[in-house]
Length: 157
Image 1 (cartoon, rainbow, N blue to C red):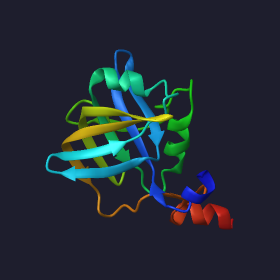
Image 2 (image 1 turned 135 degrees about the vertical axis):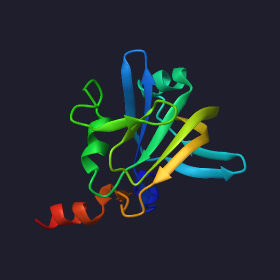
Image 3 (image 1 turned 30 degrees about the vertical axis):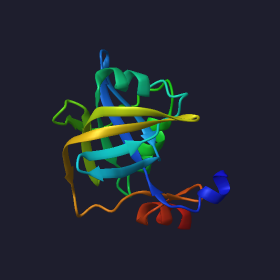
């Protein structure tokens, strides 16, 4: 299933929030726009995520759409047990959730609903604020690899 569905290209996002001990975040590949009225997005963290329950408790989160040169953010926020914000520049979004510097786009949300999604949780967020940088191209993931100008250059060298 993973090999076949890997033929569908997707972007990569980092979902951020704030907990009692500070900023939180995790990398997520399952993200999509869902509805314009009301404005909703969906994401699907793994049930094994230790970060999502802490963000859920805050009730607010920000989806950061990574730019093509931010593969390192994808890898850094996918790690468990490390300081995910080491060397990461960010600012608080309208809800207080971190907006990472130089992302393609950011979507600040309030938790709206959650549903069982097998080994993942289907999360719906109601969009409260958003922004984008039209000069930044997205980081893509396809067939188990990152794609974008920077990823292609690294593979060529």
